[in-house]
Length: 469
Image 1 (cartoon, rainbow, N blue to C red):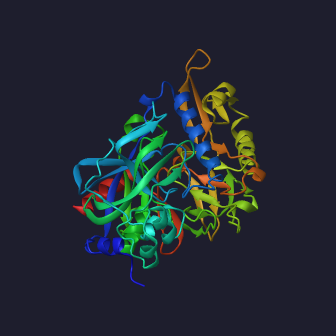
Image 2: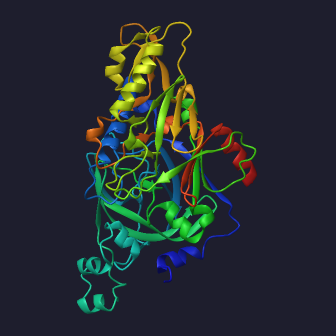
Image 3: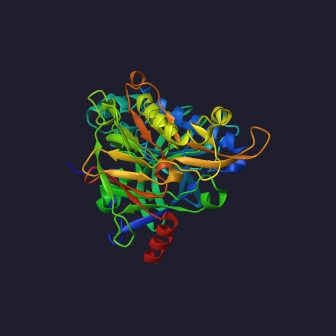
């Protein structure tokens, strides 16, 4: 069966000389948006929890519902409107590229981060109701049903002659927002890449969602999936390396490299540690992996069985997610990790309970003298699939003035996702982007695996740019 027309046109415009496409990811978190570190951490922890718990209540939505926004953005433009840059959240937990289009009405968007001016798409082309992309946007509804909704005459439906009937609008729900959009196609310009007939969602109405998303999840409409159809080298493997920032303004502003395709990483230091992707029948767009346990210092805490695999109902596994900030763990594992961590740190440092209340994180401690913190290691399912986290990836230190004087405090940056009995219908845990800082995280779709390699991400960006030029 030949590929659909919208992909055929797309294929003809990829240059086979491209080995990689290098794009800058920009961190959208800024302390200027918040009046204190407490406010920043509370907002971020609340959004992480909202996104995680929403993952198991998406009966009517076509992709992973997020809480509003993500942490990292990328930019591109359309050929029909080359002067206007489109800035979107990059998200491995979503399978659609969409953005606001003029005229755009956004309800309850006051105070929300808004990265893009609504785009005029009058010169873009609407997608047909017969397109596989239309079916994908409508949760795999059949083309005849979609064309009937689009008011294509019955005799045309029977003869599959509804190419002039456009794909109906679709509803897309997120953790604390939603939108209604139509599918369009246009030529997309991204770095040195020019893609004809790229398919995207165009929203004119949204609830609490002023900024669009570049979906990198597993699905027909995601950016990697569309790339893979025309250039497997670019679409079947991508990676990012998030610059370690600890919410520091200077480091937050540094670009984090997003790499489409494969490059020679022999000179970049440590090798990748890989773990296999797990298929999720209920949420096929997730990048799920298995977790065997977590070590705190020399003590290894086994993960509950639900984190090692995904069952037929779609329960279990760990989602590797660029859009969630903090890692969420089931209560049994979280409590065991916290207990061991507190046993090691709490015997020397005093708990800061008011800081815990204000940030939504814990345990937190007042830090005095030399602070020794146990090493935290993730043991993924697989042979020697062990990832040792740098201290700054799980223990955040900052100055606090809650008690009338400024004192140094530190908080464990992992979160309680709830009891296992409450986690049915979705993943058991999420590996957030804060814990991914300072690693190149590769999504190897050809070999169905996720890899982690320790990197100096700012240096990697400079190195790849030098090789590119």
